[in-house]
Image 1: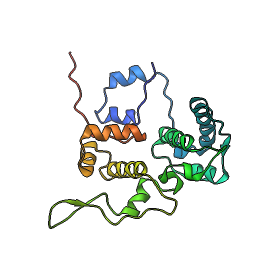
Image 2 (image 1 turned 45 degrees about the horizontal axis):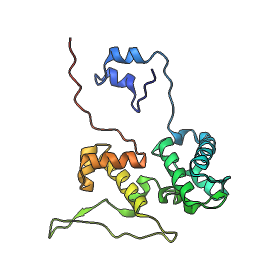
Image 3 (image 1 turned 180 degrees about the vertical axis):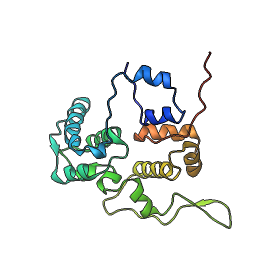
Image 4 (image 1 turned 60 degrees about the vertical axis):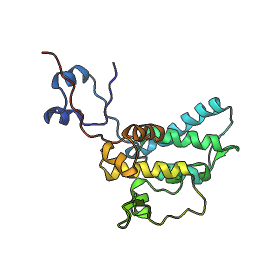
Length: 206
């Protein structure tokens, strides 16, 4: 059995949020895998793996990356880790008709070098409440010269809402005025992984 978690389970046990007996049943051989931003040397091998995979899947013959694309991929922090990299490359492979992936093929957040945190400084906030009507209104927006897509904007807004709510999905869903289930669908769609508010533990028979 292989079990994975994005939390420090030893600390969770100490603080009473994870069953100690279950932890010691699982933690026979423990492997710590740092976030992708902490192991940038893995980015290029992962890119090569996904290129081969999507060449087979989409019946294409993309050979590699342009130098600028390689630089952007290595400089990006990958808050969504390997899943975000995989999604970015799948998008790029769908768009690219030539032999090299170019910056224009990448999602806006990667091509611009902006993670959700830096997008926040550009957009100021996800939404404001208009004092007269009580309705939400967006701050002034701008489209970059290279263009963007509604999907990239949606991705950035979902990520920003999760960051502002510190991973609390209920609060993030309220910020975006969508249901929690809709938020979870979008998180899965964009490969976003954030800490979630604590859920009550299931009762156990003693």
